[in-house]
Image (cartoon, rainbow, N blue to C red; front, top):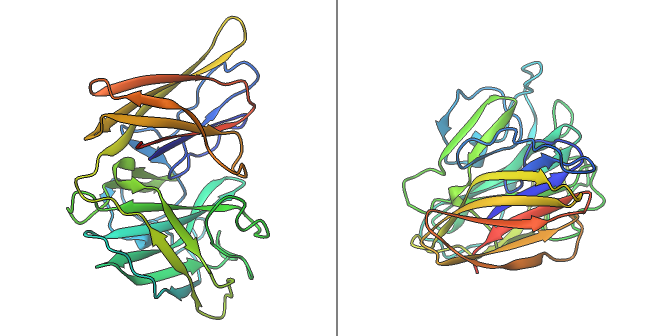
Length: 285
């Protein structure tokens, strides 16, 4: 699943969102951090670019990139299991004023959670006391920062989720192995002095399932003032895909813009968008 957002403010792209600039008539597009099939995400301080990653711990910072001080974290556990042939990892991002920040997550090996932790706000971005990390629309409205999950499944079974680059002001994550249809629930309210628990469900695809890959995005303002967003979507092992949108993270549901047949290596689709902000995603039908 690939997700994009248009906004009046240029922001760093989400692990499933690519944010671009819109100001009145859509005069220009900010594609900060778009490298091939990669999307700009949160910040980290130590890994050299680029590197293959296989755990949420490779993405979530352990030290403050501003001063090198260690970041305290709290361990979590889960008794949930899932029938998954390959490994997968989940990363929780908060939407801070400076963009998305990875603050925690968990790894699943052989269908069970093997490690999980969440950073505490203080030395750097993290969860505050009594924050939760449940998923779903309108979840965690009491949190100091809104947040969302990204789940990465080792679709091809090569032991990693592709390339990440966290040596710059962002983490570039390969989108080929990002999946949807998952839910995190019963997340114990965060306590910086005590461990917590959570449950999850995940609709994990078989390794042969087709993969949606975001290759590029362009936008232009038509002379009559109508904003048109153009997408180029690369699809493997799928004959069609669905493009959806919503104008706010708190919207109850995604709106379908239609189902499109894959045409060659890249399929081009567009949307006329007059909303001040809009999220997009491409999903398998």
